[in-house]
Image 1 (cartoon, rainbow, N blue to C red):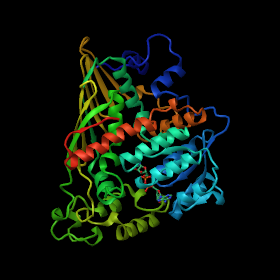
Image 2: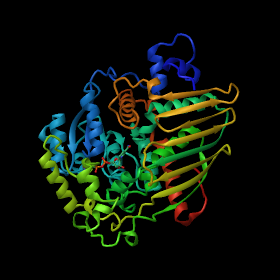
Image 3: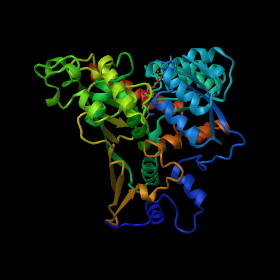
Image 4: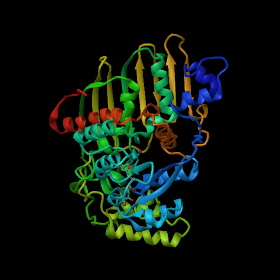
Length: 461
Ligand SMILES: NC(=O)c1ccc[n+]([C@@H]2O[C@H](COP(=O)([O-])OP(=O)(O)OC[C@H]3O[C@@H](n4cnc5c(N)ncnc54)[C@H](O)[C@@H]3O)[C@@H](O)[C@H]2O)c1
């Protein structure tokens, strides 16, 4: 396969025209509409209040810390004292703007441009509605809400109030998916007749989040097709660029169940006689390997190793993270196989898999003039006419300023586009709008209905 420079690759892939191209134009084309630069040239930073200073609240806080001319965090609501303290200290938040829960923030008159709703799934809908009615623009974490009706209500209130609301479908802002979609829209692949998309969740991630962790009970949070895979349905709908009319899904929970617990196992891995022979041991994951420990304690004291071990031990003794993975009250499927028909008759399949050794979404697009195969690090496009293949990888994408961003650069680009949309009061600078997100969320809710015996679901948005 030919190796080419970034610029040559973009020209050949049809993302930019040949000849002289101004760098700024190239950037905005590659990075998505509305993107200017890491410094957005606002005349003042926009202000935001973090509702939920956990993992995602910290990601958005990190953006503010990295780009203080763009965003200033001026308030926080967070019930875990250590997280509240940490967020307040990091962003120099005055005591009068520190709150225990989101309700306390919204009891006060509006005191910032935006709120960042980064609380658990069951605390998205109501805070978002109330914030919009108070005049706040909103960064709303996915999934938007716990039901189709709630998603539609958010859309209704957003349209009534005219607020700018960005849904954190951050993959839409990753250069990998932006460039992939641009190739599809350029017609280089001809007409797409089929799409295969797979989300390998990686087995430890599955066990951490959907067996022991916050999302283990779909009735309290959301079904995994929303909690984990609304990103994928959204990307599929966005790349196919047409509505999905029919959808169906299968899948279930078969392994992490009481009847599969190893013989002689205890209720907690700390008191388990067979722990050392168990691949699913919490002691192995958190204590020995120190994986994903940010989620199992209020704040990780990275510079105090002794304290760290103490906190891990405490968590394994007192929280779900120390329980036997086979003896939880979990109900999330570990595998899903879904099929879709789009408006033109094009078809697609989606697989979510909780038993893989690797991360990184896999995508295959089959078109009448060419095809594309990608694994989130790189994708290859083959042209049937010329018989040539071209490859994309991050080295031909410009990650300037956002190297630290998660989701393939998507996290920070999302925030940047949202801030631009808020500053210019122009929702068109955003691709993950409420309206677009409702559509892909409905696909998820219908898959869940189908999976539970509802058969093929017709979607009329
Ligand atoms: N966009 C993405 O790619 C992405 C990735 C991971 C998680 N998420 C979503 O982001 C949301 C947050 O996930 P997370 O991983 O940050 O979880 P988290 O548990 O780390 O953070 C949530 C925080 O909200 C706080 N909280 C709970 N109740 C509250 C209340 N009443 N008022 C104020 N704060 C409250 C919790 O104490 C916690 O610190 C979830 O909905 C999740 O699905 C999105």
